[in-house]
Amino acid sequence: MMETIDQRLGIDRCEGALQTLFALTLMELAEFEWRRPERHGWEVGRWPGLQLTLLAQPESGPHRAPLAICPLPGNDNEVPFILLISLRHTIDRSYSDSLNTSVSIVTLKPVDIYRDVRACAHHVFDRAVRLQLGYIGARYARFRQALPGLPCMKATMELASAFTAPMSGMMTPTPLA
Image 1 (cartoon, rainbow, N blue to C red):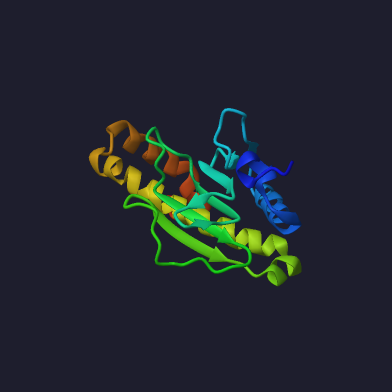
Image 2 (cartoon, rainbow, N blue to C red; image 1 turned 45 degrees about the horizontal axis):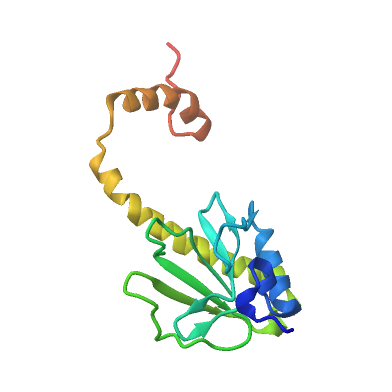
């Protein structure tokens, strides 16, 4: 009996050596945790420090990309963006899954992956991290504006500058009398 892609979980959803190789190379780029049994079947695992998730064969509207990276889903299971990774076919860029999710697409040629899989993985991973930093920056911007500089923080910075500033050349030494 032949099993379908929907019955497989995690890394087993990868179709062929190229997808598996690329997924394994992505996992090596930062501390990675494999999928736990209670998590979604599309999930291969997570980069917990970056709050990113690697997905295999996720459905995104009419598309099923070989791999995707997105932030860890919130309580409502919504994500602010998803980076679809196409290893062969071009995915229509006009498609958007929902009003709350930004869809980005990276298309890689198999010949480029075979030539330098690590460089391709770095390219994709850097793009995912930049998307995540933009999202995190926007999410915490309201807190930065709302919190005033506390007096104890100012005093700590002034004390610390006496130790760090001379090393960085920011402060000039006072002349001896």
